Every structure is written in structure tokens, then in C-alpha cells.
Image 1 (spheres, helix red, strand yellow):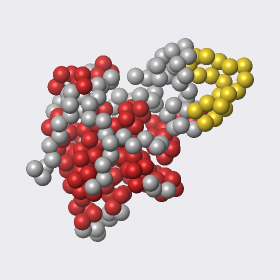
Image 2 (cartoon, rainbow, N blue to C red):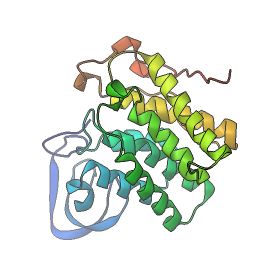
Image 3 (cartoon, rainbow, N blue to C red):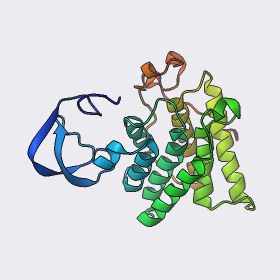
Length: 244
């Protein structure tokens, strides 16, 4: 949970140094010179501290070597620039999937960066409130963006276009089945889990996504489903695939 005083990550007291030290950023992993961290050792570089949510997602995902998209998504969700709800989640979903996919496929950093930047550009077309006003959650569409990018799909593609649309459809189905008013954290996690299943079934690529989590964002969401949420108090996530 982000904190507004002390350490932005844990709320602990900050410790200042008389000399600059080489410190590794908790979010993007970059090693820079700094003169403070919290007493628990957390340090956030200036780029991650002052950037917009989209800037932070892009920076962290390009530099990340994490293989679990759920862990990467949860870490980014805790960043103070990330709102409880908002269109930044439409970029978060394809970004973490591309970041972990690139690590598993050992893609060059330049190729990984190019894919993530394209995902950011495409996600900007998905406005806030799409879930209710257009009947298509932006997090679910984000998984379609992910598959479109890894298959180089275009409107004239055959198999690739079909896979991209099926990916979006399966994500939206699982999001719809969860019920309730929108929760960008819940819907993003559902979309990521659905994409992990789809990637294994259709491409034979296994992303080691953690299956059980305990949501820490419920008290920030007035529409929280509480016990009815699949992520409440470490419930095991159960998803349905439309193919069976």
C-alpha cells in the first residue's frame, strides 16, 4: 500500500546520508546516486518518484527481469503514482505480460522496449470508463494488445487477428463473471491470469504466475466485493476458458 509520508512503500522513517551512496531502485532496479533511503532499505530513484503512472510502468517493465507477471503487476500497483482506478491499468496489463514474456523468450532489450512502448501507444486509445460505457474493460483489451504485439497481428491477419480477438474475449468473459462494479485491480489481475492460461494453451509458453494472492487494496475501493472477490484473503483463483 503506498504511503504519503515517510517511505512511499512501507511508511517507515527515512534515513539521510551526509555523502551520496550508490543505491538500487526498488521499482526499476536502476543503480543511481542517492542520499536517502528508509530504515528498511527501500530506495526509489528520481525517475520513478516523479514520473506519471505510465512513465513508471514503461521504465520498470523495460528494465525488469521478473518472470512472474502477477508479482510485477502487484509491485507497480503499489507505486504512489498508480490510482486505485484509472486508465493506467489499460497499459499495466500488456506491459507486465510483455516484460515477463520477453524475459522468458530472452528477447533483446531493444526489442522488449519497442514492444512495451507500442503497448503504451495503443493503450492510450482506451479511455477511462470503457468497461461500463463501451462494454469492454480496458484491462481485458490490454491482453488482446499483448497477443497482437507478440504475433505481429494486423487487421488483415488471419490466425494472428483471431488469436488477438479470442484473447480479449476470454479476458472479458472472466472479468464479466466476477460481477460487481469495476475494480481496476481485480480486473487487471483477472486479465493477466487469463492471458497466462491462454499463452500456455496456444503458444506453449509458461509464465510462472503466482496463483494465490491477498489483495491489499480493498479498503481503497468503496465498491469492493470483499468475500465475493476471487482475490480476497488468499482465495485460489479459478478461471473459465471459453473453449471448454
